[in-house]
Amino acid sequence: MAEININYDNFEEEVVNSDIPVLVDFWAPWCGPCSMLSPQISEIASKYEGKLKVCKVNIDDELKLAQKFNIMSIPTILLFKNKERVERHTGFITGDELMAQWEKYL
Image (cartoon, rainbow, N blue to C red; front, side, top):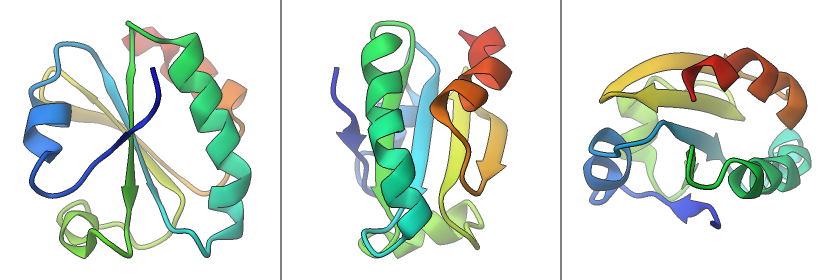
């Protein structure tokens, strides 16, 4: 499954009401570390299809969502499970390192 682009209008439906855990990547097209992380986020989406939903939020287009989650630096990745945010990581991290920490939620 490909990543889902999230906006303020579909956030609750796609993230909060998801029946599986959701990884949300807050990024911007001008962000170098975000560009380095993007292919790894795509790999996570493929590898964990059916067990993890992967969503992306472009903070330039969705300032309201970035403010709601106090996103001050990017990339910031949030993990939601059972309608709650359970993890947060800010800054570059490899996809393998990220999932080694978060796989317990799947």
